[in-house]
Image 1 (cartoon, rainbow, N blue to C red):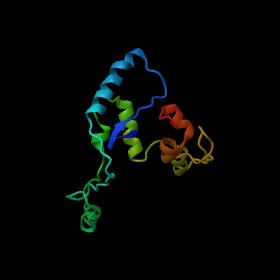
Image 2: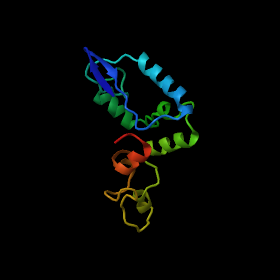
Image 3: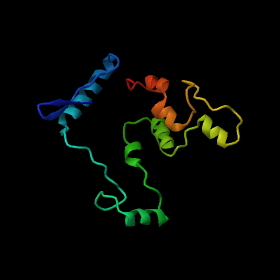
Length: 144
């Protein structure tokens, strides 16, 4: 979270629970990493990685669509050190939309009603489970 502080950004962290003894070292390491990052109040930018200079270009987009190369995949953000393999594999499946949900079971021919098992308020698909489901967000602990 960002806090405005005399023209500069800063971190205003709110944790949803107290830390276990074994987590204190990890939290201190996290805080050291955050302190080393420079935060600016400049407007965020969207960079397109399909081109040479970070700006969208129709020619580059067309070239990506017509080439037979594999699609761009955020492998550096998923296959990283010190992440349990089960978590990395789940992130890989989620990135490709392959998490087994009721929606995917229906696409395989299963005749079952599509409601989120956790909250019951919407259809169960990858986006709902990982982004919109209020019960899942509480279980994961994002503080929502």
